[in-house]
Length: 279
Length: 268
Image 1 (cartoon, helix red, strand yellow):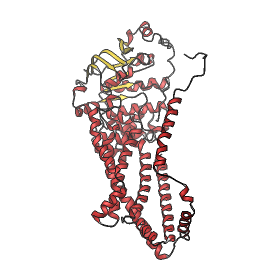
Image 2: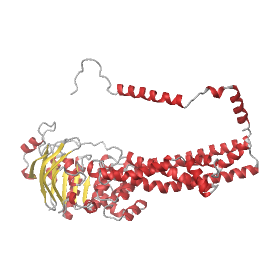
Image 3: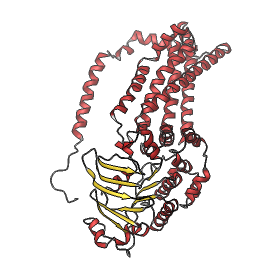
Image 4: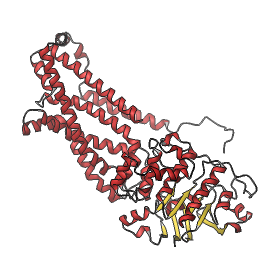
């Protein structure tokens, strides 16, 4: 009952745990800082600053000779192709794994207030484990591996992106599905609908926007990753940057970094456009 | 025999007894209303009957089978024959009404048909007819988040009409509608049940609606069945006892119906 209250003002019961968590976080972060030997003063040291300065000064003006631009265009297309093909393969891995891993499509959970039976959850574990294995090895390691296996060129990059990003997309898709309102899918399952149909009618309408935006963001990451992998010989812009850097052609590097900027901008706009269409 | 409950009890995970020792037999084609104060266990009872909850004790028989003894495949087929109308229909906000209604037959359609229907509505006329009976045929191609609470409830009812189940279960199906519309909508539901000879169970807050539309009334209080009577035999004392200690005064048939209970429907 509401009555005129007497006595001291009520204390927020959540205050103490919050304070304790903050202190705990700081206590954990501090050793991390000293362990990573982070020392920003090194950047301002006279010699180092001069070296960096001369390296960056070489960036201007960006290279824009016709022959180089043709090369740049080809490398950009190759990078886009690596990222897109890698993402398509990653999606083929991620979509079925996410459907198998997500708890939202559990039929046993329908009658148990959303908690699946223990053995049904146990069956989801191997899929989760597979996704963890796929994404726990960095794409650069996969790329090095595949460069040995299939030789220098874009194929290694595509496979490396497909495997690592398949693991990431699968995990995130499964979690997005679990984070949206589960009642539509549960109601459909309780009306005897097949799981895939319950997913398409009950989960997808709520989750599609977020899944799409994450996919486009990952595509953007794949573009960047394909560049890093280019350094180990997996083709695309990265290989060009590597070559230009070795030849101290700062202008060429600058042009390629500008291309990057344009690509990321493009991905960002694409994501916005698609999200606006969907919401 | 459509429904038979023998000594059914339901204890939630937190140890609360939602239902205790429920005995209920409903024959095919019967129409009955479940009334009782908030928190009495009406929704739990309907969810048990929809196999959305498994009873913790007792025997539950639906349409001649025991759902929890069946294999999961047979239970799935049984579920396609049960239609539950939710108080706040669980419809994704971005889904179009036509899709939401046609989803009623997902349990009967093969998977490919269900998925194809998502790309292009396969039976828009069927969905329109179901909606037209509830006077919202004009909303066919609108999105669920553009509808009011009462309109959404009618979309949920249209889905079950389209499903054509053998057992219609309705949990406060008209709680977000004004009295006239609520009466009309219940009339559509009872007419549907009568025309197809299927069983209809509805939980209702408004006692006068229950008395006017249903020949059999079951009163539920504190997880137990308080009375199970033909509607003409429900006395004012029985109602008073059912709602005792509630702020609701026991309504007499002449009094205006209680204000429609407005539900906050999240996300849709």
